[in-house]
Length: 304
Image (cartoon, rainbow, N blue to C red; front, side):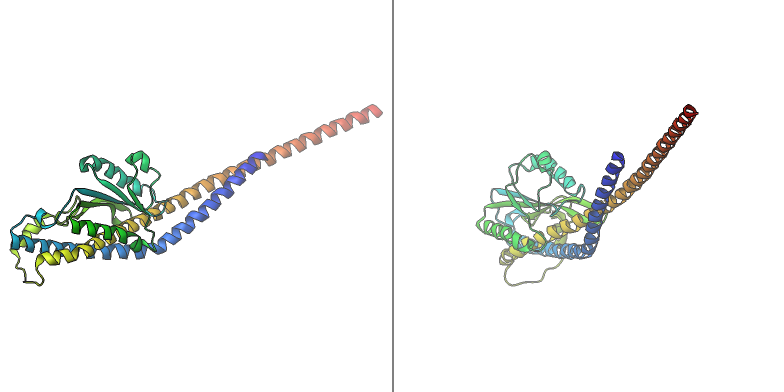
């Protein structure tokens, strides 16, 4: 009986967990469409904005005969921003990105480390250092929470103290694939690893004819700094949100399938154990009946 009770408790516990994972799967399923559209729109907007920034930078080069790096004032402070998931239960979504960042950190040198999202449980074991800044930026308030970052970077860019800003996030490819990616946000004239645009693309654009614009390219470049940073933040956040929800959907679906297999095995074990208990009880009853029958026969013989 004790074994039957233990199996029954385990079946109830797994059934409860399965209800939770099933509910999370359904909730995630309803969100995937919205976050995928947001990621695709943010990516298209970022790519269009990137081409615009490159054109303005190219116009500055042609006007002033300066190099691409000299078109923007840069300082000595460098910052790496890592975008992680907002919640758990999304498999190795964060671990792949953190492993890539851990490999790149020695090459980046002395750099300020900021995190947008919640720290992964494996953060300490992989990164071996604490972040300098942590912003959770949940779904309902991420724009307000990240606005302080954009404002601080804009001030440091205007004062010339900011050297570079690099974003590290999981690029959403499909439901089954999210690729860790590095994008250099500032200076915007060089794209980080994994980007399709770069200095060669800017040089190839020199063959095109550019219209004369007002104000001049330098003034236009400065006015575009704030919107460019906001576009990069929006793209990284939406890409991370889409990848997180897809990873969670796959994890919850796998958890439901595994729970179904475990429940089938436990129910089979429960039925087998219950049958053994019933058989044992029947055998004990039959044995007791036979003993009583023998004792009755002996008593009758003794009376005769």
